[in-house]
Amino acid sequence: MKPVAHKLHKNSLITLAGTVGVGKSSLTKALSNALGFAPSFEKVEGNPYLEDYYHDFKAWSFHLQIYFLAERFKQQKQMFESNLGYVQDRSIYEDVGIFAKMQYEKGNMTERDYDTYRSLFEAMIISPYFPKPDVLIFIDGEFSSIMKRIHDRGREMELTTSKQYWLDLYNRYHEWILTFKECPILHLDIDAYDCSNHASIERIVRAIEEIQANKDLRYLKLDKNYLHENKVFLNG
Ligand SMILES: Nc1ncnc2c1ncn2[C@@H]1O[C@H](COP(=O)(O)OP(=O)(O)O)[C@@H](O)[C@H]1O
Ligand SMILES: Nc1ncnc2c1ncn2[C@H]1C[C@H](O)[C@@H](COP(=O)(O)O)O1
Image (tube, rainbow, N blue to C red; front, side, top):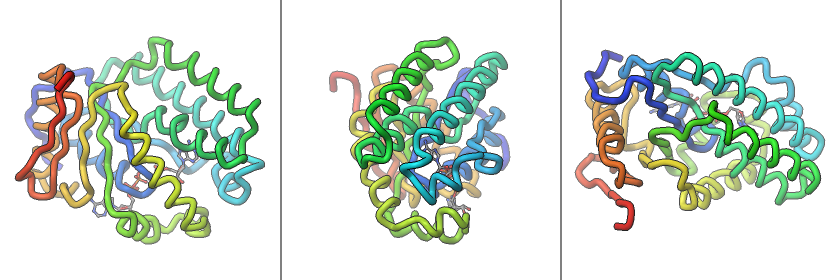
């Protein structure tokens, strides 16, 4: 991806959110390249709990969530200390607000473990290592298209996981984003951009610039043809 000239602060934090397989890593690569920012990926290889988790949620949910929190803490500390601009593949808010909550509500994490997990999370996010992102890009799309992407990507542990799990996650993302108030949201549908198209990525950059320049703009949605934009302003 060719660079895109932009006016974003040089230490901006752009965080991508969205369900598994929706395209966060791909857009993280394209956007960080275009902006000249560093990418911060969520590593799947080397995760000591993920595969076990998919085979037995009850046995491994707490361990996996603690592991993800520890990884995010290290990642955030490193980002904070480098003082660079970052595009981050997934937010910590999704770990707690979607994954951990879902497994607690399904009875796969005990109340005691969930409380311990949440108090650790709350202690972490008040540290200076967790500045609020400048913008959270919420990537969304048709459930069937996302399932196809999970299939085509072909991670064995995800292929053997029930469709119901993906559907529960998908529905929870839609509920969660309505309550998300930590920072402004740029809402992108997977049909509304193309990671390999310069003009398409540039349009996303312009939308982020608009959000960063206007503190009252809390929500912006780019539609398929960029013909209509949906905007919500503070107190608006
Ligand atoms: N814009 C896109 N168009 C077509 N396929 C895509 C697009 N973005 C991602 N994919 C494909 O979908 C799959 C999941 O994408 P990925 O970026 O790994 O998602 P996530 O990080 O959200 O799990 C990958 O196989 C990727 O190549
Ligand atoms: N907090 C989490 N709980 C359970 N599973 C998680 C969590 N964060 C990520 N994951 C899983 C989902 C995928 O299998 C991999 C990577 O996520 P992706 O959305 O593909 O980047 O980790």
